[in-house]
Length: 90
Image (cartoon, rainbow, N blue to C red):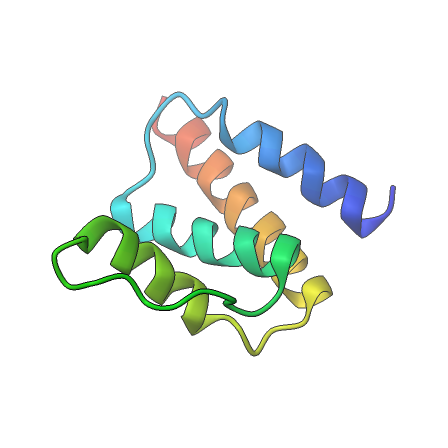
C-alpha cells in the first residue's frame, strides 16, 4: 500500500474513533491533513473574532514547511497514536 492510500485509510479511521480527541490533537490533525491535501496555506488569516477558524488556520500554518509526504506520514503516525490511546482506555 502506498503512502497516499495509507493516508486516505487513516483519514477514514480517525472519523471512527470512539472517544473524541482533544482540541490540541484535532488541530494537529487538521493542520497535517490540510498540508497533505492542499500544500501550504493559501488563504489569509481569519479575523480575531473568528477564533475557531483562526486556530485551524494557525495549525495549518505551523506545518506549512512540511512536504506532502512528510505531512501524510505525520498524520498517519498521529492517527495511530490516537487509535492506540483509544484502545488502551477501553
